[in-house]
Image 1 (cartoon, rainbow, N blue to C red):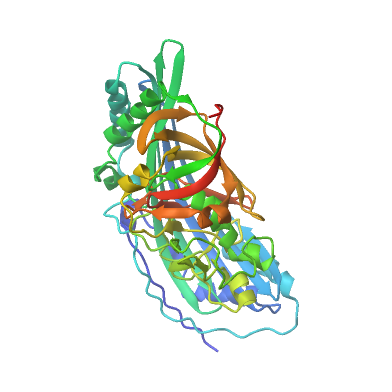
Image 2 (cartoon, rainbow, N blue to C red):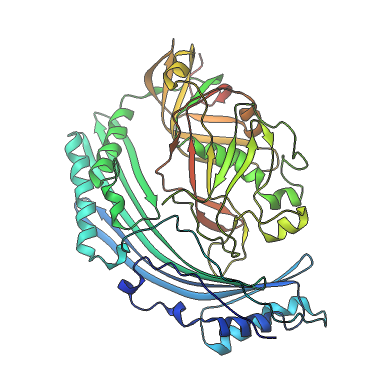
Length: 489
């Protein structure tokens, strides 16, 4: 039986970079590779072709410290049979090596029953990250100028700024996903990431501050409001200067207000991972068997949305060939679904949710978050602050640790303030938040109408794989979290 193939293509200025190595991969070749992958049997097979080109610049103390440029190219082949997975990859896209990879992956499925070819349906992808031109086509001197502008802005902010480092990473990633369901889609996934760190000194005090942003952009990222090199330079300097006068943090259970935007990292780590379907399939999540049950305050609606324009975690197509989607996970406090890849979706009798993601062609896809968000509430953020007699306002996070099986977490704050009698007062240093993700969601008592998507450089790690993600929240009031400070009340 003949197989027909149709692909959808995202251009995004590909011609500016020259002909992509993936342009030579056509439907006929993909069909031969799928036939080899299913040549020993198997329920399903997919091919993941990847071409990635990127560059990194680091500017420190007024001069360029490092510049790097790299290119990767390869193919990953996956074959599923029942609960078993065969996976192989090659970094050489010759017919011989690609067929060898397909036959290696096929060894998992020696059933003697070989499926026939499958007709491939035409695919039209959305475009959630249209950009006029790849950043890679611009000369390096333009990018060094961006870094120099950030350096100068940070130093001009205050004479107490004594050290500045700025960095820029850019990536142009092309993928071609073909599977035995008859799906074949090409996508281009650009990424720009920018960061500035500043150090301030006053007497014996020395404090640091950071600012950065990222998204699926070209250099037009820096034209957006609040995202110029000067904006990031001044913000890093502002935080460093602010922390010079930070006081010891209180310790113990107290009311905590999570600021809009970056507080989404707590949602991602303490709740989101527990809603990834593989943990629930293996019954290692605290959310196992809780579909339909109340797991949070009725104020809470949690969404994973891979369709937000130019956001760092957005995807036109996931790494199994499923379109990026907006998935409601918790609705008004009720757990309504998990984030599914193909394997877990089959287990739960659900459809893949567009969350099958992998770090590269060397890795198998797993259920992963894209942009994880809390929907807005109705409260005025100022009213939320005014409602707190004594507590902590958490604005920026540096990361933390989470136990997926029970949701226990510890997060460190890089910017936080004491709240006294309804007013934000002194900046705090050395603040940790200690708690349990599901309990925190049950203790949400006020939710702001001020949703913000973090412009952070967030990367999610799982099973040794890293993928870019986004986060966002409105201002939230939690009735009680344990604050791990160094000063008792």
